[in-house]
Amino acid sequence: MKIPTLSGLRGCVMITVRGEHVNHLINALAESGIPVWDIRPTSDHTADMKVLLRDFHALRPLLKRTGCRMHVSRRIGLPFRMVRLYNRKFFAVGMIAFFMILFLLSSLVWNINVTGNEKLATEDVLKVARQAGIKPFQWIFRLDEPDKLSRELSMKLPGTSWVGVERKGTTITIQIVEAAEPEKKPLVEPRHLVSRTDAVVSSIYAEQGRPLVEKNTRVKKGQVLISGILGDGDAHSQAVVAKGEVKGLVWHEYNLQVPLVQKRNVYTGERKNKSYLVLGNRAIQLWGYGKEPFAKSETITEHDPLTWRSIALPIGWMTEKVMEVQEAEETLQQQEAEKLGIQGAIRDILAKYGSDSQIISQKILHEKKENGKVYMKVLFEVEEKIAEELPLVHSQGE
Picture (cartoon, rainbow, N blue to C red):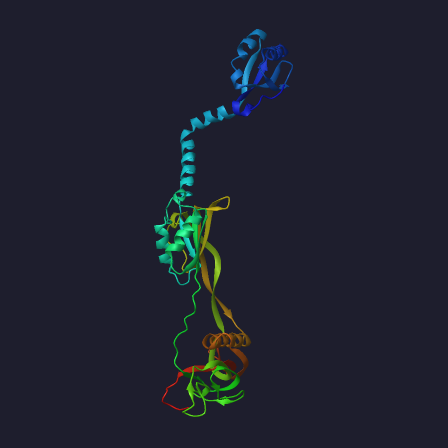
């Protein structure tokens, strides 16, 4: 027979019927208009079938008339699930409470990010946003539309040309576009550009002022490279701010010492995990209490927030892996130690004299191996910027 509509929602039972007149029972059910389906004979005098829950009690007169007996083998559908759920009401209440708490937490503002601000202080932006209702632990449904919030913040934040408000899950991002203002040039006094060290000029470019040296000229420390005085004499001279770029070849001498035995930390494979429940910006430790069993360790933190679709919820899990480390020794060959020492000296030169400096050549003047170390004296030829400012006194001539 045809399966009744929404039988799973209305509830049905699978019954096993025993008797010599099972066929008579099925015919009687059909005559009475009681739907049965999935009829499967299991032997000569037994059969399995399904019947709606509402028709279950109507079977008794027919069973009595045909001399059959019935046994319920399976209960199917929503009514039986509701009964089982009622019997586990504490579990059901807990599940409902969990989803309610999850819904409430996802309906609050947890994080507020401010981007694009350079001149405006983040604290000032957050203060104005708080006046507009954008603050942590605010109900999301109580906030105005993003367009209205953007207009309100634009009016209250001076120096901005546009303010955007965007919400993703429990995080609100305030994007600032500051108004372009004409650059205020600092007031500068007339000046020379002089050499800050002894060098050989490799290139010179005078944007403003009068160059006094040429390429391949050897200069001393303090020598004027680009003059800030224009003109031939005192009566026709003019003091300006000398501008330009001068590069030169400079020699730097380094005394290096590199240990042949290098020490570094390596992981042993032993570790201890600490687990935390993350609620917003707070973390509650659940497991991993006790003192660290390692004499030396490094900690690696992993954060795994809960997500619903593309929304990151303010609840998550954080694990701290405390990794045991031991100090290992590595013995270098003399050539490896030399290379390591020269690389360290080059990094120091670039840090002191600018990353645009170029190492032209390097020469080891003296080297020896003694007491487990390599000692070297290295001369570096470097092309770097050599000009520095010198204020110009008006009363002096050039």
